[in-house]
Length: 156
Image (cartoon, rainbow, N blue to C red; front, side, top):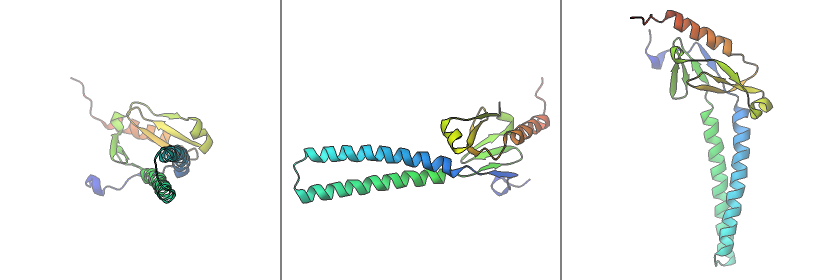
């Protein structure tokens, strides 16, 4: 068997990037607007000249835009695909072994219904932002059952 870093996955499950980016960007825009209004309120209490006030508002606006952009970019980067191997699922930096999975249950919240996605609850972890077009729950159940059938008995 090849070392883990060189092992090819059996399957690669992409996350729906729209489901991640649109709600996150809208939330960041909302929070950024509140933050900018708070900064404007604070600036109004300072004794600044007109040019200093304009520069301060401009710098604050640039800062808010950079923070929103950075938040959206980090969310996009976090939306990496899930990799399925013979004995485990790789969830970004975490690995979940099939033997540790206690359940395989599909769940949907309000945003999932809007974006036609779902979450697969594995008991010890979750696979988020899966498109409804991909029915992965049966595949995961088969991998878990196969791993449990091949596991050595631990009786005394």
